[in-house]
Length: 257
Image (tube, rainbow, N blue to C red):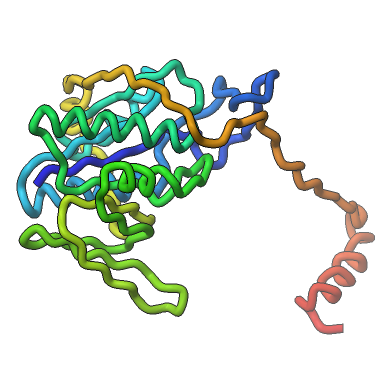
């Protein structure tokens, strides 16, 4: 079985986001980077599928040279191969990104290295577009199941499950090759081992210069949401504040009047 998993380098969650002066991108000087939790689970699922069925796994990302860090993280937990669609670091819209991935997949097919399973995170942690996996599947003429929480493969048939709005499960059976977008919770991603990290450092990352074909939305600028303010009220100092503290606790219902 040949498995492709596509990831995106995104700012680590919890960091303070600031914009460049032209408001066209995020200022990354003080940010750490990672992949989204959905994509971490997609990488783990790719490794598990190969462990269960044999074959090999490939991780792919579109981004600048520094995105090799995320590719090597995937190699460190067991992915066999890494491909960087190298850009200058500018943000690509979902249509352009999907087109670049489609070109890469077709190039692999022409080299007799086609994929049986293509895995994506359900959405990127930074932009939340929910589009790339679906666009790739449509362009390649492949079936696509989104938002899955379980995936099983047997005799060329994949059984994918996702949670329904009513609280049950929606179950899909599709023939391979197929595209699946994975949600966090499908598995528990493993941590890279020390031998895995050493192996990842030595592994060659294949580089491809993608052709940018636009056609999606054009970004005008970015805008940060207003920060939530807070107020502090000093109730007093020393024993004199005790009465005010009791009054606040009564208002909160912590103590009875």
